[in-house]
Length: 199
Image 1: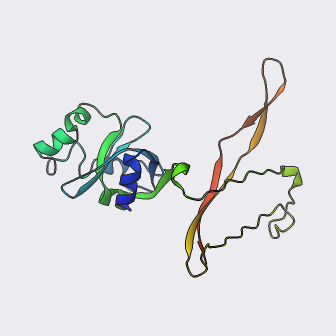
Image 2 (image 1 turned 60 degrees about the vertical axis):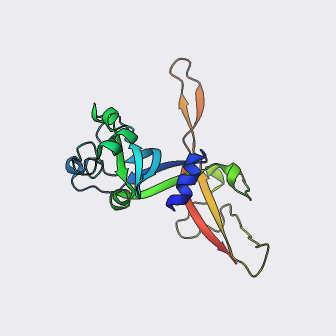
């Protein structure tokens, strides 16, 4: 995985975010619970795999291994290569963290790939209104449905397909100036990313 994301990052083909779950000691660890972080850089030096991560709040940063408070791992050579002194000046929410610590303290990593690198891709857009939906918690068969049919080019081989399903909500508000109804589109809510083995 490391080689793949490093390659994608260096060619600007992927955007990476990571997120925490419940952090028991936020102040001690330097990470917020249930919080998303952006990955700004990925580097490997002398077998050590590091990520430069940003807390979008612009403050409150990692206190563990390879943090600016770490007095054990930072050699003068590493400080120079990883611009340690620039980070040490003040807490701007940016910090280096080793991949092993990411695996320990973060619950998920989202990798958004440039669609241009995908050999095969298909996007389908459709919509239906809430008024068309049947309200039934037990049986959804009368609501709009999709059927996905995958066919491998060679029957003897299996392949992996990724399906991203998103949902957009349309809301409206009343304009305070003239009383007109204004329609708004909220941020897309991603329902799930599913891997499907095509046999």
